[in-house]
Image (cartoon, rainbow, N blue to C red; front, side):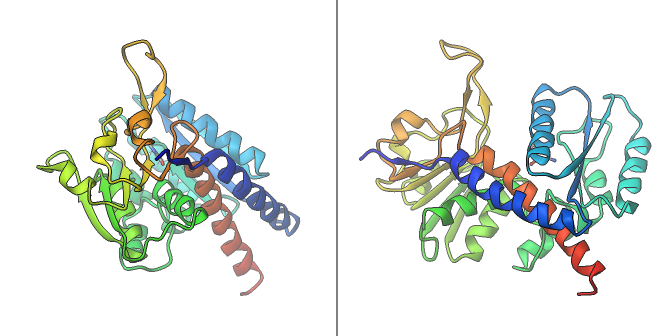
Length: 292
Ligand code: GUN
């Protein structure tokens, strides 16, 4: 079997078109969706992500604000900026790019963002609401994965799903979202004893471990749906410098029925869901202004 490729670029373009249309309508009503992005330090990958997020905002007709601080900035200065953005009614979403330098408490920074403007869905309040199955801003990467699965009518109810990775950003919320839709979910991680035992039973595998080509074809059940959340830059070999996922695409695609590539898979959907969350936040402000 050779798997069908789930094209994240194509799906993202379609969803972003609808988002841009809705943004235009809101802007005509006097509320232009606005995302503020804070970057601390010079992590090259973070700089690229932030640039892409700002560019995506502009392309969708959103306003975007970018604040860049030196890596040795005092945390008080960043907290003051967050407070200012919290209080600014024209700002609908606030995002602090992670990771932060070591002298910051990421938890404290994320908790400083108003939950109603936490379009990354990282605030404990939004995470708690997600756990309870309530309306909230959901973390963009796992939510993007859910949209991708829905776009292909992947059956989640009753499916065996294995998530590899237990981060707050991807693994944990991913597991909760799959669970909410009726999957039987197993979360695997670096301490899991027999990873293949779990992955070979899975109808849906989501790899979010941050290790290049970690999940290989022999670890996958024939016909499974394979979602690759990894973005790794190869350090050595003939492909050094190239991006690759957590899945060994070449061997996995011979076993899976549907697979996401890297690049061009989950990545474009992450930014798309960030736009969707920011739009939703602006919509709520518009509804409140209209007295609804
Ligand atoms: N670092 C890696 N992924 C993300 C993300 O989705 N949001 C933020 N704020 N930082 C990240």
